[in-house]
Amino acid sequence: MADILARVTFRLAVLALVSPSTLAAQSGFECPVTALEYRLPTIVGLMRGRDPIWLVDGSFGKWTGPDVLAKSVWVLSRDKDGEFTVEGRRLDAPGTMFFQDGLSGSPIERLVITDASAQMITPGGATPEIMERYVFLMMYLIYPDSGCWEITARLGNRTTRIVIEKTVSGG
Image (cartoon, rainbow, N blue to C red; front, side, top):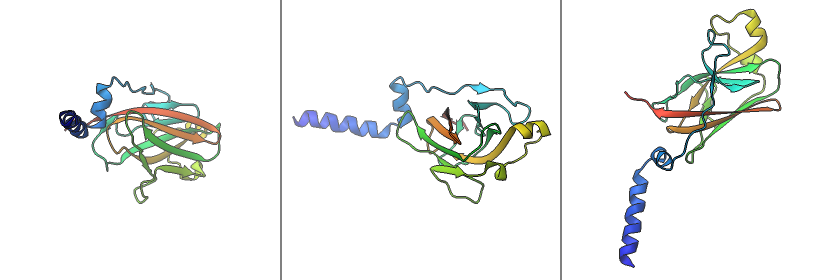
């Protein structure tokens, strides 16, 4: 019995040293990444999502550390209005991501913007016609670890889920 207990204790100690990302990869978990879309490539670049909410991920899929702010842009269709909320969770292991509205804000798990038009930015190259169709919001996303992340964004009564895989940046 002591021998079995020692082997179980050893295996648990080894598992504690292995990161959740490694365990997910070993378990065969495949991250269901949301496809990139070329909706406004000359304005903000590639985006993920679906009408009425898209995300331009400023970290390009790379994860460089738990406290790194990934400057990102939300693109919201003006065809839909209402409160904009965003929150995120890890799919391949336990974890919650954080959001920060501007450099002076504090990271929070659920960001709520009551009037997106009041906080919108105008990206370079955006024509008046583009600005009539979309609202652009800049914010920071904070991924505590590499892995598979699901972001749930709501605009009024519409919900969009975006899945992004963060891999460790080499360098």
